[in-house]
Amino acid sequence: MSSNSDFAEGLRGAFPIMASAAPFAVLFGAVAIANGQTVAEAALMSATVFAGASQLVGIELFGHKVQPWLIVLSVLAVNFRHILYSAAIARFISHFTPLQKIIGFHLLTDPQFAQSVQRGESGKKVSFAWYLGFGVMIFVPWVTLTVAGGIFGRLVGDPRIIGIDVLLPIYFMEMVLGFRRKAGFLPIVVVSALASVLAYRYVGSPWHVSIGAVAGVALAAFLPSATAGAEEPVE
Image 1: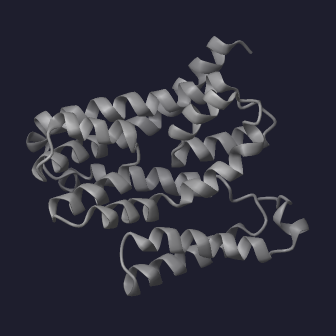
Image 2 (image 1 turned 180 degrees about the vertical axis):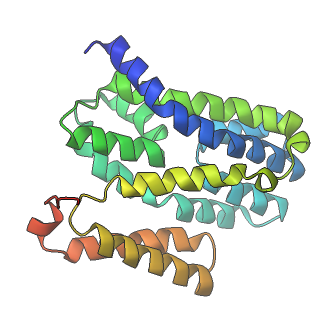
């Protein structure tokens, strides 16, 4: 397959994700302005951090005049899972040049990780052209719609009123279920979810994200290696 074909395939694959994430980019732009940021500052944060949940956490802390070190630590807590993501996809992108890896890790989001692993494990090559097309389809609209949200966000109001906020959680649920064929899937998901819920109750946000992830990884590490690498048939 040519690079152009791979790039176009990546664009098409990411389009539904971009559509579901669009309201949150607009929401972030509006929230950033409400917390004293300029449109340019909101756009810069979307372009450099490029992580919706941690951006919202960070911007809320900015609005409450929290110490900078605590803001950085909170953003790192939310994004800790990306360290695990980068390690998991390393085997599929080992052919990337150093510059391509730098670009690739900047574009690494939850759906980018999930689709890269699924593509690699299905036997397809995770080419840089495909990876870039997938990432660009999410990145460019994310930054652009942040600007739109900063300018027009007050006209949109609360996305929960019209149910838009449910789109992204539904996508993430579908992304998790995409790994259901792997042995150990159910206990790992259950343990991770329980740890996250308990951490949210007793530790608080945003630490529950990282604690849930670490709990799932810890259980996976203790599973027998033969089981962890096998695939279970799905009825």
